[in-house]
Structure formats: C-alpha cells, structure tokens
Image (tube, rainbow, N blue to C red; front, side, top):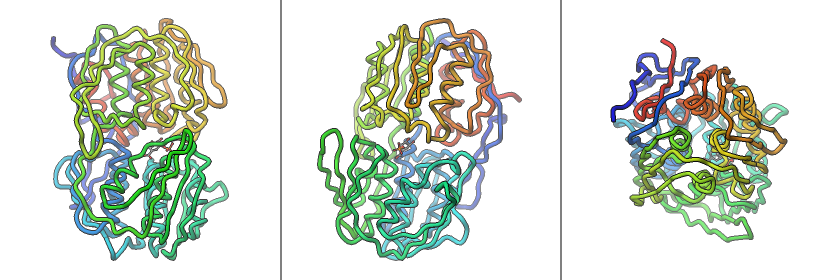
Length: 470
Ligand code: S3P
C-alpha cells in the first residue's frame, strides 16, 4: 500500500534548527497558519519523539551533578533547547554531539552560577518551574522570563514553597514572569503539603532539597508523574516514598552529591497520543507507534481510549532509561463515550484536548470533569478545546472544571481555530481536521516545535494531509 503524498515541504516548515553556538541549538519559530484535510486510511510505522518531561530533567540534573552525563534520544524541541541554553548560562557544559545525543559537563561541587542575562524559558512551564527549584539550593541570583503564554501562567505554586525554604523573589503582583530569585544557598528543609496535583511543584521542591540539609518532603493527594524521583535515584539520591491514601509523601535527604550518568530518553506518550487518536478516528487505519513510554503515571489516555473501545495493543515491552517502553499497534475503532474518572487526571493531564477530539467521533457522551488545572496550561485548555470543537460543529458543553462532548455526528469542520500559542491545541485541531467534512485551519503551527518537532513529517509518513502554505 503506497502512502499518500507528503504535502509538507521541508523548506516551508514553520520552524527550523539554527546554531546559536558550537554547543547548543535554538529553534526559530515563524508564525505559520496550517490546514488539515480529510484523507484516506493512515498506515505505516512511526517513532515517538523523546519525552519532554524526561528531557528537561536530564539536562537539569546533568548540570547539577558532578562529572559527565551522556544523553541519547533527547527531544530537540524548542522547550528543551531553552532549558539546554539555560544550563549553559548557569555554568554547565552543554554540547550537542549529533541528533538527540548530548553531553553535559555538570557543575558538581562548584555549583550552578548566577547567569549574566535573564534566562528565557520560552513556552516551557516545566522548564521554568523545575529550574526555579534547581537553582534555589545555590548562592545565586537569576531572572526568568518567557513568551506571552508562559508570562501569564501562575508561578506562586512554586515560589511560595521555595520562599518557605528561604529564597527571596521579585515578580509582579500576579506572581507571573518575569521573576527574579535570590538565594543565599542556605535553605531550610520543609514538609510541604501541596494543594496541586502537580509534578512540576513536586519536582521543584525535590530539586531544591538536593542541596538542603535535612529531609525535604512533599505530600501530594493524587499521584503525579514520578520522573524526577526516578531520575534523582539514577543520579545517586535516596528518595523515600510513603503511600498516603490516593496520594503519597515523597522525601529527599540532603545534601546529595549527584553523580553524572548515562540516560536514554524514552518516547513521549503525550506526543504519541496525536497519531494514535488520528488512526483511531480515521476509517481503515492501521499504524504502529514505536518507542512509547508506558509509565503508569502517564498512560491515562491509553486506559481511557481502551475503555471507549479503541484497538490499542502495546507489544515488545522493554526498558529504556529506567522506564518501560512498548510499541503500540492502533487500528480504526468505533468508540463509545465514557465518564473519565477525575482521579485519572494527573496521568493524562496534557491529553484532554486530544481525548476531546476522539470523543467527538465517539457514539454518545464523554464527560471530563475535575480538570480545572487545564485552565492554567499553555492556554486555558478547557476553553480553547471548547472553541475548537464548537467552531467545527461538535456538540460540546464547557464547565468551570471540564467538558462534555456529545459525539457521533458528522463533523463539518471549516473553521479557523485560534491556538493561543498552545502546541497541544494546535495538534488537536489538525487531527480533528483529518476526518472532518471540510478542512480545518489553525492560525499558527509554529509552536508545535516546542514538544513535537517531527509532527509534520511523522503525520505525513502515515498519510495525513497537513498543509503549511508555501
Ligand atoms: C509536567 C507536568 C505536568 C504537565 C506538563 C509536564 C512535568 O504539569 O502538564 O506538561 O514534566 O512535570 P503539572 O504537573 O504541573 O500538572
């Protein structure tokens, strides 16, 4: 079976890698409206790109550790490149050897240093929040800034506990970026109960705890992704986890001497979600997505799609970088609506926009509640998802804490979706359009490069028709 023609001309891509120094690269993103069209079945094999969460952590811990850290499979997306540049500014040696292969010369005992310029985290909430925690354990002063989307996101959730540990900070009244952290490096261990089910908050506190004398703990009421805990252990830290009801208390005993290590980054289930849903909703499709991380703190979408009746078969299980990975075989499936339990939210928090697209093609109603956290992601994702579905003829209702999608009718499409500089809204809208009656256009696709720089080539490889105008 031959694949559909590739419509994306590499030269017209809305982003490109550019060298900023001999060591690191930067991704230049150019505003680019993009359209997806109805196509025949999707077929073929693609490879999931490196996991964004684990990529950030590998650069940050590699820079804090003593000695060399060798990374393979690093996601070369704009968010990660911003973190790589930040680690350079903070004194680590950061070198790109070849695609996905990076070497970090960590600061070790000498410690991270104050950067001479503000650190620009771009669009990356994970980057800035983890960095705030990581630098707090050193004698340092650093200013963080970001793009328009990041500059409107709440930072108090990280700055408050770090203040309890002893940092000082300045930012505007809304506790948004730009923000300056000043730390004496002499922090106090705290026992923090987090009001948010957020791995970013947990990670910031644990990273600050690395250089804090005593036991620093964080209690979370629902389990969030555990990549920081896993990776801290790989760098030599002792992490204690005490289950508490549906949640847990995670502790680190500091100070810890982190030692550089080798890390192979597994594929990102949050990125794999887009081709997977595309195949499920497109009649006749049959694809294989290889190298997908199956950490249970990240696979809530796969559980939900399976409950909805999707053909999803994970096979060829193996481990990579301390995480379980598998290849996922996906076929077109007739879905039925479900109620998504709110306790599942942390394991699929980034996947609700694409789940809502799948729900639009499912028979019956899909209810997604208890997810008000979505309002403070790269955009207000509850509202952005509502607008993307409603504007293209889907019956959808917005609640303060979620969405209800009545699926199963023919989807007209034809709208231009506002992405609000949010990569997951952009990709979700393009996937909705590969099966709607009329093409769906998005105002800008450049920010897809933050998390899934190979999105266009991967989708073209399996036969999707997504056009960036010449
Ligand atoms: C992330 C945690 C999640 C997620 C984000 C990545 C991480 O945020 O939305 O894309 O790498 O820790 P919260 O844990 O704050 O919900």
